[in-house]
Each structure stands twice: as C-alpha cells, then as structure tokens.
Image 1 (cartoon, rainbow, N blue to C red):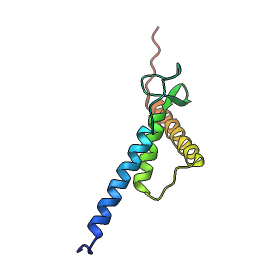
Image 2: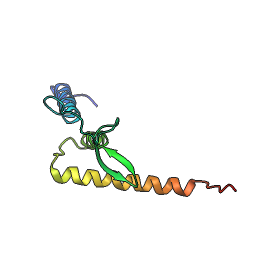
Image 3: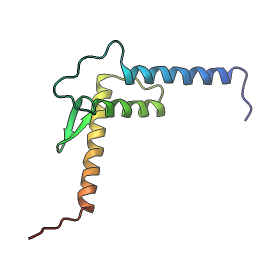
Length: 108
C-alpha cells in the first residue's frame, strides 16, 4: 500500500513521541529519591502476592506495554490501580499453575 505524502513523517513523530513518553514513565522526572529501607534490589515493592514481591518496575513495564498497544491511553490513578490488580491476578494464576505442576516428595 503506497504511503500518502507526509504519512511517513507522522509515523516517525508518533514513534518519537512514544519513546519520549515511555522514557518519562520509566525514569520519572527529576533526581531519583533515596531508596527506602523497604526497597530491595528489584526496586520499590508496591505489593506482594503470597510473599512474592511486585516491584514498581513491574508496574512501569506493564503500563509501557499497555501504552504500546493503546497510545491514546492516559495514565490516571485509576489506571494504576487497575494495572496493579491485573499484575496481582496474573501472579496468582502463575502461582496456582506452578503449584498444580509441582511434585512434592516427603522424605522419611
């Protein structure tokens, strides 16, 4: 399908805008704050699922992937809560599947 005049430039501008927005989301703006005592090597823990931490970087990555699928998406507090819930649900499913496939041996 032939490109219309200016379509390539608009596509390039969209890609640049996406990269800038994702960079802003992933890095934040300003100087990074000191890590709190609760922070671990994976970043700040924002939730746990059966003792397994969910880090802020997991949320940022999940939001970036969602934004890639829907560039018109706006990040609001409700969006953040929904995304955290989606991550929790996925972790619960994964943990359940892992337990189903686990072999437990009791040694005497």
